[in-house]
Length: 178
Image (cartoon, rainbow, N blue to C red):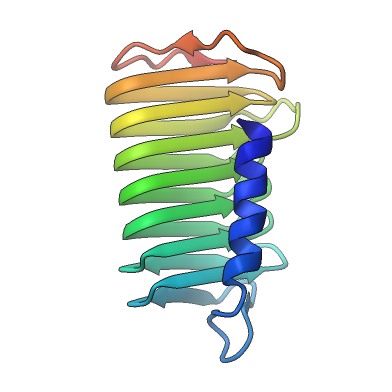
């Protein structure tokens, strides 16, 4: 799942790299707001700490940012994001959400059909994933993580890169994770 999600994010970014938020560029400035809306496909990228990206009312959108960034997407079909340490990302009112998040990050997925999240790095900082009102939520933790599930049909976590036996997380479970 980790490789598949990573390849999806990269392929999505390459395929959609023609659309951005700074005129002809797809690069956003750290600390500034950067958003896409009202189109088919959009890809946002930001180098540096403290980026603020958002996508809404699109068909597809993806965003990549470094540490301490904020990413939000809503009201679309598919949304992906990849961020560094201590990011705050959310995906809601979509068909599918995919994310790769760093240590100490928070990711919220709600009102979606599918959510797939991979956490990176084995550090003491815990990544927290919240799935609410989601049909299927699957998380692969490569470091410390907590998964909170509420009103989900399937919610499970895989611990480590080679784990083929996921832990099933009960609805309302606040102690599921690695």
